[in-house]
Length: 122
Image 1 (cartoon, rainbow, N blue to C red):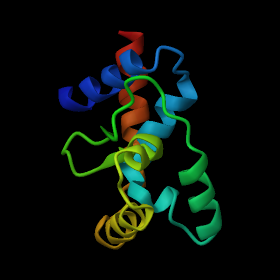
Image 2: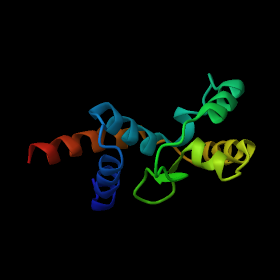
Image 3: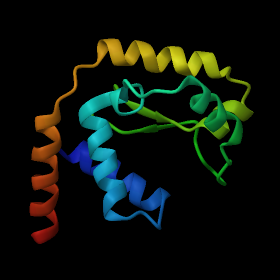
C-alpha cells in the first residue's frame, strides 16, 4: 500500500472520527472497484433521486472526497453537491461514464486489506 493511499485513509479517519473498520473496508472496496459498487444491475434510479433529495449535509462536508491514490476516483457527497446547485443528472452521468471507463481491480482489495493488517500489526 503506497503512502498516498495511507494518507487517504488517514484523511477519512480524521474527517470521520466515528469511522469503524467496516468503513475502511468500504473505502478500499470502492477504490478497487470504482463506481460499480453503486451503479450495478440492482441500481434503482428512483432510489438515487430519493437519496439525492434526502441527503443530510454534515458540517464541513466537502462535495467530493478522494478515495484512490491516483486521484481518479472520488466519492460524491450528495448534500453539498445538491446545495451548491449541481444537478443530480450531472452526478449520475459522471458515475455512468466512470463505470464504463474504470476497470475493477478486486485483487487490489485483497492486497490492500492485507497491507493494512500488516501496517496495524507493525
